[in-house]
Length: 283
Ligand code: AMP
Ligand code: FE
Ligand code: FE
Ligand code: ZN
Image (tube, rainbow, N blue to C red; front, side, top):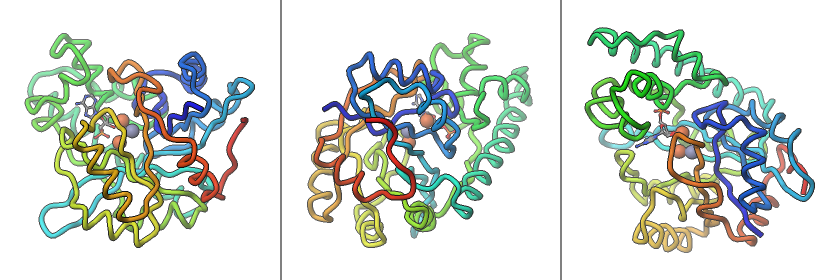
């Protein structure tokens, strides 16, 4: 069984519409795919509607969280699976994050414009068809103007990596975890060792999250090298967390391919057994 538990459609910052993502997943030989768009569940229905026979969709999302540790706050991502999308407090929090992404992107547009780059908020909104605006959409505008030649180049410090970056609003990670669980879902810590994205959190925090009900942790992820994967596996064993693997597919916005990393069947089955806020689709 080939299982990929972390993908993004164009309803957040991937480039494939949900139905096209499902078709690509089938073509890549995946039996199970989780759709985990940032801060939205808008892709669940179209993905489910296009599911071919024999394939399973795990409804999910990637929640933008923050840890307010002793030094400066550190951003981190929790994958939530099989939660009730109508849970009031969770869905309100997701909406708040999506709305704040708009204001944040408008501010980033303002910074670019102040430097003579004639990007407009309207253009950026046009790229973010699902209403979840992120820096990859601003990257599109920079590429279009020939200022950078790829999305990852747009994340250099002189562009969206630092100079024109405005911090994102998000949710305290312990609250985010509680909300996913309250909504009947299962939570997995996404790419905990992805240093290329910025600061990573200490293992002690992951221990505290495990005590608070975190269920799993991503080991096999494109942003983890062999040492990081090994470190996560060791930590998972120590903390009794389920280990997952995924592509974190973003369509043409990233080089990673569907099924590039996968999750073991046993881990997947444990995770599914722990989630009760929404059913699996198909299978
Ligand atoms: P934002 O949520 O607006 O802060 O943007 C972060 C998103 O940009 C992540 O979810 C990734 O999809 C993407 N991203 C982050 N770093 C890179 C990178 N170096 N190259 C391409 N995409 C990236
Ligand atoms: Fe993303
Ligand atoms: Fe992430
Ligand atoms: Zn992701």
